[in-house]
Image 1 (cartoon, helix red, strand yellow):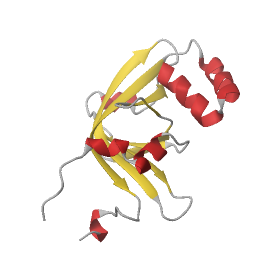
Image 2 (cartoon, one colour; image 1 turned 180 degrees about the vertical axis):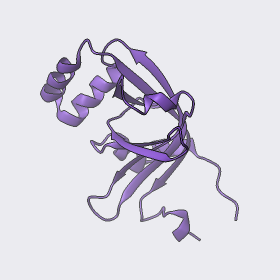
Image 3 (cartoon, helix red, strand yellow; image 1 turned 180 degrees about the horizontal axis):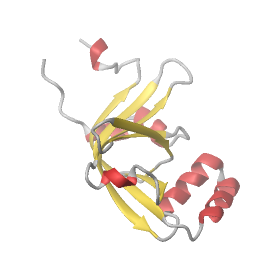
Image 4 (cartoon, helix red, strand yellow; image 1 turned 90 degrees about the horizontal axis):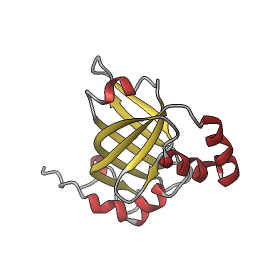
Length: 154
């Protein structure tokens, strides 16, 4: 059975847009130094081409992403049927910053609201942060209405 080529245009699909604009946390999956998989919940910001996440400068994931940049990101909503999921694969790029990443600040406002988001970011000002950027290379959308996991499809 042939697999479909990746369709990055799916990021413009209404289900994908709903999830990218939501307050659902992303799950970032990466590979640890011993080859075992790891996954962490994380806030994200999407600018129309790149998914960006902020991380404390001493987070364990930062020790491996330079050598093992292949990652998967999932954003899903399982609160009500039919479930929705956005599945993304790409390569992570890490930049160390001296302060809060602007994308993290935007995410904080989206997740917490303007006032609480600003207060949270203010508590982090002046602390180093890592900016993790993932440019999608492979995208799938599951809506359990018209798009199902491949195990359930034809």
